[in-house]
Length: 500
Image (cartoon, rainbow, N blue to C red):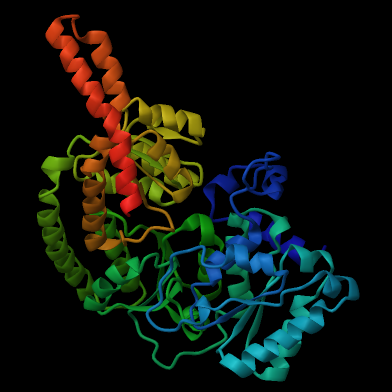
């Protein structure tokens, strides 16, 4: 059995996934990927998923072994932020041409690219990504990476996740396998302590993990590695010496968390930093795991003190928004951890949830939603754009929270919309992030533009006047005067546009 095929089957047979364990042996081998509908958007390939997970390791050179389009289409597809190194923002690709493919020059060109990166940038490591073209023509990136590592004296990590092997989520997991096989455990830190943790599945979108890390710093808890958000190569390489771990997005890296627990005895739990209650519970769980692994028991008391202080501050700020938002209706079209954590967060301030998508949610995520909403009718696996539009245009929701791909449905329905996926520009994690999320919802709902765009157009006013006003002499004069004003409106608008 080829190594990649074996790796994929191993990833699909995930013992830590309750949904996977509920299947029979035959269904389990097929994995979690559903066949794609011809002509429908696939939502990302395995290569895209692997790059999403690994690119936020910021001091590493990420080299894409492919035609240039693979790098062009996948570059900067996450709003992850870095507090230091910026090498990850540089695009590296072997830029294979048709001639390279025909003449079999792929491996030689890859080795040359690795040498040029090493000599020009001197990174601590280079990650090399296979793609559909290079996998199909049989380029052995693992052999090239091994030879380059010996030749140049730095880690060269093969990421074997060509796009055609499966979905973006499979690519997430294959990226975790690459870290387990080639990175984690390859460096020994000299400052091991009882308060070290790993945060897994946190991408530091818009820098939101920076709202959480100060809380951990105040408790004396050190983040040995945040994988992948704002990570450094040596941090990830020494992540095996952490005492405990928190899993933020289980659908992406559950295999990484489980295998680190099996190999290095690092217990983990799944939690969320979205919302006040969930942030507090995550801090409690981190403290409990660390105490079980040898940290001082006073950590629990200090954690409760910190939680009480931060919750009081956050609730005081949120009270200003409660009269403006209580009873407002939100449609949530997202998935994964946000399908339940954001729901819980919004309900804390009196916002009503009219529906939430569970398309990318695990069985555990769905169970949490059931407990929070108390009504399964508010959960939908997927909703066609036409149905989303009907829901919004019929005024059954005051705002939709989703990713950028569905924003135009809300805009067409003349309904406020707020981005809460990876393209967002505001951090929503932690206590401060919850306040920011509510502030952005308030700004979106009460933006005066929505009142303006919902008003009838001038020509609709004219039709209404023609139909409804009685046929009296003064009414006719009024209609004539109104038509005269309306007739001038396009002219005024055009002159304004020309003046710009």
